[in-house]
Amino acid sequence: MYHAINGNMNLHASDSIGKARFAVLLGLAGLCLTGAAAPPAQPGGLPKNIILIESDGTGANTIAASGMYTGKLGKQVFDGRQWIKSFASTYPLRTGNQPIPGADGLAQDPNTVYDPRKNWDTTPVTSTTGRYADHFAGYAWTKRTAPDSANTASAVVNGRKSYNAAINVDGNGMPLRTFAEIAHQAGKSAGVVTTVEISDATPAVAGGAHNVSRANHTAITHEMLTAGTLSVIMGTGNPDYTNDGQMRNVPDYDWIGASDWSTLKAGSAGFKLIQDKAEFDALSNARTVPEKLVGIARSFESTQFNRAGAIPATEAPNTVPRKADVPSLKTMTLGALNILGRDRDGMFLMIEGGAVDRAMHANNLGRMIEERIEFEETVEAVSAYLDANTNGNNWSNTLVLVTGDHDHLLLGPDSDTVPFQSLVDKGKGRLPGYKWQHTGHSNQLVPVYGRGAGAPLLLTCAKRQDTYTDAQGRKFGRGAYLDQTEIFSVMMGRGCQ
Image (cartoon, rainbow, N blue to C red; front, side):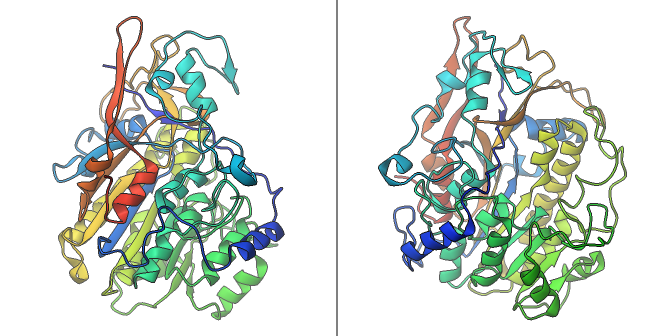
């Protein structure tokens, strides 16, 4: 059987719909944010703790690549028998990147809806997408109907489909109630941790921000800092430092506005600010911790991926030494758990390996594997935290979900002629045989792993079947799958009927 991967066109939104219009939209929405099936503020089925761990841009072959390189294929932490395993569809409401008023804005584009017959179509074609030939109709379809990180992450945390670039707003641009807000209203502490900028799409979405465009970085950061939903925010986007930790002569306020940055540094934003690696290291096992914390590593676009040094397509992992002056995702996660995990009412924490996606956009398998290894070490750390019943948090009262928001079309070395060919395992410490079929995203299914309180609810939602047999009798598919909007239902503790 052939095994597919995933991918997606990363359609970054323009800034054409500005902050002023969004303010009007929020004003129209008032205090009544719409949401998926209008769940109650404190639903009885909500687990005490919910930890959502997302590896941006990750599908089946992304995971396989790191497993082959490390020699852990099939033995990664989420392969354990305690974990529930499934797949999820990631399709967008539509591929446009702006809201549309009225009924048209809320209507699902039928061509983007995941369909095994379209995805696995092996009919030869002569078209191209970007700089890559499509080769097969399925490649062409999955690339051209792809979602982005904003609307896929939004689907997970608010239960609704939207357009590409939407940050927790519907197809009209109206705000939707998010899981972070629901958790906060239920008395839980909430936080986000990422290896990229704190107001990039996935942490912005998981942190409960709302915006018509993911491109409105500073407005998103301002909401995250002032809405009162979050107790912990960690990542990059530091205005004062470059990607290599060098102090800038002039700050870059692309991700955090000058006023918010000044307020944070002055200690008057309601959060304690940390920047030094030593401060992150100390936080992970500190006996006394602040109630609210923002950690901005001394790096701009990511902790590691954007470090100086050539990024050739054939670069092996760690060819360019990794930076020693920034915290790892594992360290940031343990620090966040040390704060949020003390809340007797529970916590919601989203952890993102954000630069996996960036390595895939660069078609750099080596740095992708680096980021995946760091991500998997973090999943192991979360598992150990729960195994130890830290602060009373354990698998009986905690739901852990590990997934990706979307994937890229990474396939086997002969996939120009062998449709959806798998990667070729060349042994531990060696890059697998592979071929990139795109620099952007795809509309393929992504893996979902769950363990702990309510994890079996994933199976109540995985009612669709991803199977296809082509004209030559070749069989394709992932088996049972759910949709990302139903992951929201699982986190809510209600599953699918």
